[in-house]
Length: 88
Image (cartoon, rainbow, N blue to C red):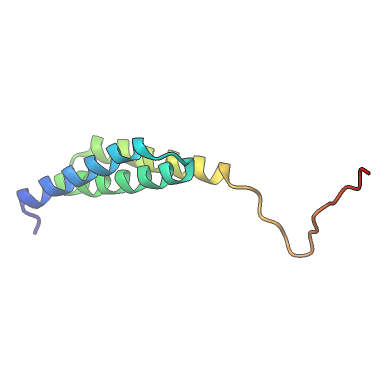
C-alpha cells in the first residue's frame, strides 16, 4: 500500500529529476534524465490514478526515446570496412 507521504516524495523526486534535466549539456544525457523523470511521473500518476499525468509522461518518455534512437549513428555490420580516401 502506498501512503500519501510516499506519493508526495515520488512527486517531488520526479520534479527534481525533470528540473535537473535542464542542466544537462549533452543531448544524450538530457534525454536519459528526461526519460527517468517521465518514468517516475508515470509511476506517480498510476499510483494516483491520474490518467492525464500518465498519458502526458508516456508521451514525454516516448519522444525522448525516439529522438535518442534517431540521434544514434547507424550500426556497422560485420564485414563493413571504413573507406579511407587517398587524396594526396
